[in-house]
Amino acid sequence: MNLVYEALAHPTRRQIIALLRRGDLPAGEIAAHFDIAKPTLSGHLRVLREAGLVIGERHGTSIVYSLQLSLLEESLAALLDLFKIDSARSPEPDPN
Image 1 (cartoon, one colour):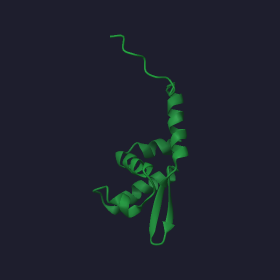
Image 2 (cartoon, rainbow, N blue to C red):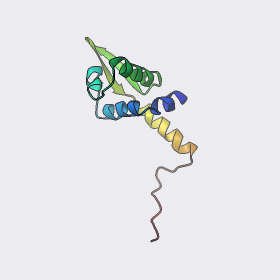
Image 3 (tube, helix red, strand yellow):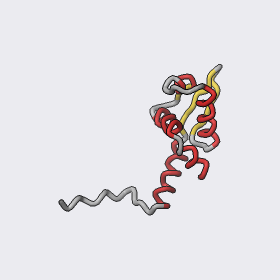
Image 4 (cartoon, rainbow, N blue to C red):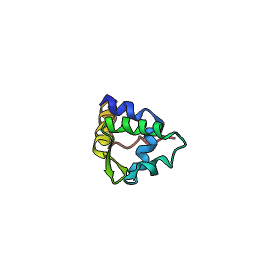
């Protein structure tokens, strides 16, 4: 689980996850959303893969990435439990 939290700690990796929530994307299309060197982006994708948050499948000459939503949901549920946050509970109304 620590690998997941470490992967989520970087804003670029969180942005990659947000992109993949919309659907699977080839690495080149992911790269088009960032103004960083391709080796740097590859490093971010590697961290996400090693944490199990994304998978990459080779399609011809490109790699298409998809989000592993179940692991992300499990990680968020663990955080909610750790901090004793009831996700089903709505916020208390403001008395004023």
